Length: 456
Ligand code: ADP
Image 1 (cartoon, rainbow, N blue to C red):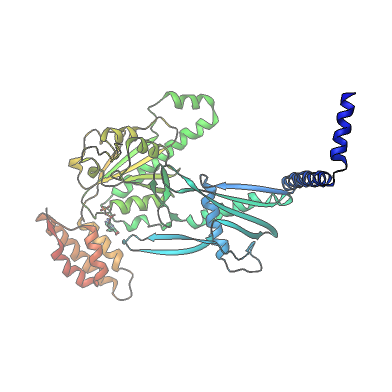
Image 2 (image 1 turned 90 degrees about the vertical axis):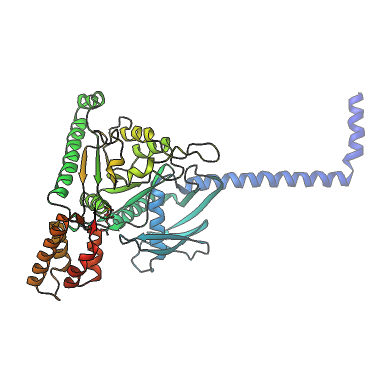
């Protein structure tokens, strides 16, 4: 009874109230719109999911570098009828700088403009692809200090097969630019990154060493690689062999080489030429680099890219000082024992070839030169009479400006000269001879060479 009366009173109050009715109406419209919007959003998400396909490439992955190379190549290419990709003109660009360091020390830089952070469109094999390049500004890669980057590619679901195709094209392009070239990498934090552009390989015979030296080192490396392959092949075939690899820690997966001798005798040039001849890359490690501590070194040595020599130059210079600590109290340099540990490494199935050079072998600790760390110790010395003669004939022979007979006569003169000076305890470096030949004609070179010998 009482309830019925209350309803009647409320009905009387609001039922005929036009303001209240309008409010209700508005609320209904609002709710309706919200439902519609959410429905649309849901619909578009489902549609996107069904119709579109997305690929994320992050700069943690190697394919990121390849994709950027492809990007630089395809967005700078002059559009032709037969090109597979065409870019919509981008307004957000970023610059990619490539520095090429030549062996004579000079360098040149090339700039390429690529699509920068933002949204871009391009057509690939007839399909439209949206590319979103995003940079994470709040967090950085811990070791290298570079921002994280992600490239997200979106296209129609039916064109999903284009992604593997595009990535394969990018990989082949990156590989092609390195083919027949020597890639040098340096350490960036705990990563190995290419240093400059891949370089032309230097022919092995262009580095003139004393009789038999070059062949000795080359044969040793080849024999090691061959042995390694032998074990790897058997490891693949049988589980027993695989197990035996684990239980025999004596199997030489590593090989260490030390080339020692005066500066300018061709140590570095020879290692680079040998790497090129074997289609290996070089990972250049600077032990005195600030911030390189024992743990990073171990990581770097055990994570070098496949088919690469690790090259440590002037290995004597790294340990003259006491252990340094940076302002925040962290160890900021490599200790000698840390270096030995890193060289010995954890037992890994990967091959590792380490080349070290020094101008002062007498400064090296005997613990470093023992077999297992240094398996082949080779002296690369100043010019011998034969080396001087060979370099001379390589340099001036075959030129139209001078008779072959004259080259031979001058080469012989030079050989005698070097032999005579050596008897008097004076030597000349191969680098000094090379510099002399570059600046002079053949006869002048032999004449001016007399002033360049230095006493020991
Ligand atoms: P190192 O590492 O012994 O100090 P490098 O390999 O850096 O010497 O040589 C310095 C320069 O001298 C290079 O440009 C190289 O071409 C030249 N050079 C040195 N030794 C030789 C050699 N044995 N044969 C040919 N060139 C040489």
